[in-house]
Image (tube, rainbow, N blue to C red; front, side, top):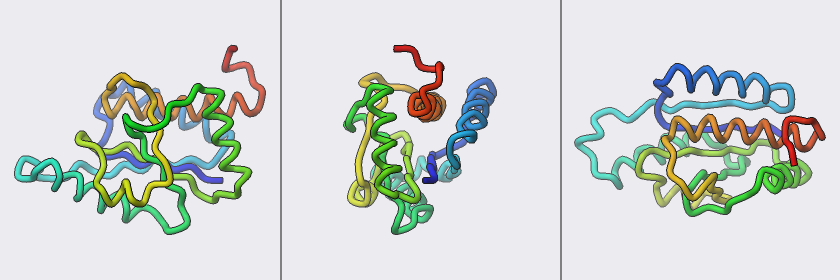
Length: 157
């Protein structure tokens, strides 16, 4: 299985970027992982929230194939413990899913077209984090999941 994370806008904090790169490198020992960053939309001040979500949604949908399984990182999504998330990833691998795509949306969330296409939603926390931090937290959780599945000592019970 391949895993792809699609996000809107670059990470401008160099420290966060270094940590993201570190966990991407660690994750590469377990699975093919791609981080795809869609540039911020230009002239957003001339767009309403819904117009911005629609434009972002179109860009995201253009990066997804019909066979990809799409999971949105959404505050109203299902929450998992790290162990339960690793079990969920194992189920997806066992089901023969070729590409699992996770998406972190823009500042206003997702368009209706993205919600309609999605195969599920997950929430990392009831708390709100910056989109840049969510990238790091999510990639770290992916890494943690694979160490759990391999019975490696990174995760402590």
